[in-house]
Length: 259
Image 1 (cartoon, rainbow, N blue to C red):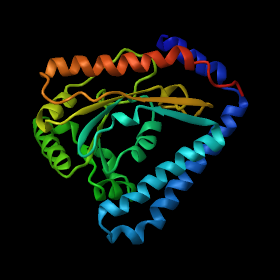
Image 2: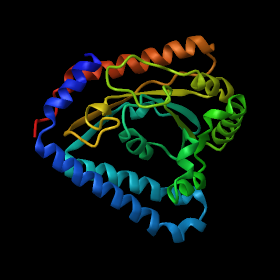
Image 3: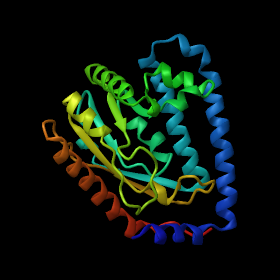
């Protein structure tokens, strides 16, 4: 399954029904998000950890809206591979879908994300409130040291660090582009790293207004235990995630119905 084939499949499925349902869902998503942000303001004085249930509820409600309006369902395998306590979770990143759907899987996760997101009014305040680890890509080594320090603190606090090793969303079937940052965290934190494969980009494509019906497949793979050399770790991580993610493409690319 190549990138061209996947994108061509999406174009074929983009009927008027898809456009209408996508528009309804996107409007509902922004309204739902705004309501959660505003209603939660009085709760902002509470400690972050118990308040995080609001975040999980917002994520679940968004995924429910996607299923109700657009027809995006999901299937998760391998939940038994999630360790207890603090660890790294390195996920394939094809869509905004996983930034929402993965949150309820963890006890108290922190995501590594772009610093620009913390500057969004109101939304950015919540990111900082819940201790998300922001990356200032222009800061170079200074940023790397800060991220490593925050990640170690999060692991010591029993949190799960969710990282997208490619740094940005990739089209299903595109050649992988894994960055070394995940290896730095793996070495510094000395904790297990759980690879996560998925195919969300088939149904919630990046940089697109359209959403397509179908079932997102998520496969939580066996953890990579600490102690591997950096190169060996990167090879194992990329191989595990890419092999499992690519295996999902041929059987699911035609899963959705043309609307």
